[in-house]
Image (cartoon, rainbow, N blue to C red):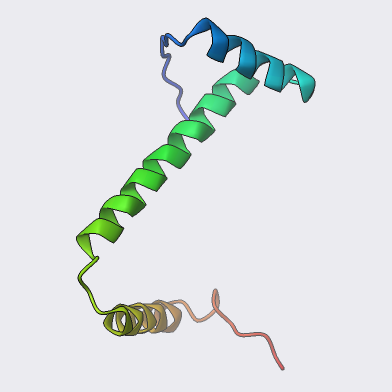
Amino acid sequence: MGEQARWSLKVSRETDIALRTFLAERGGRKGDLSRFVEDAVNREVLRQTLQEVWDRNADLDPDEVQKLVDEELAEVRRANPDRFKRPAE
């Protein structure tokens, strides 16, 4: 997790009980609440970032996007041949 920051959060009592019950039913231990919140925040940041990218690129031709992705993947594979070896057939 790296260096940690301390947050002070307020949630409804219902949310608190629901989450603590959820974690306890799965054998929750010390630190699980923090991990749950961190994972949820990371997922939401990723979801919103992806949505912004999709919105920004909504008018692009899908074939052109695929061509750009293929070109970039090929470049990454050329630059890192040991990391991206294709399995022998």
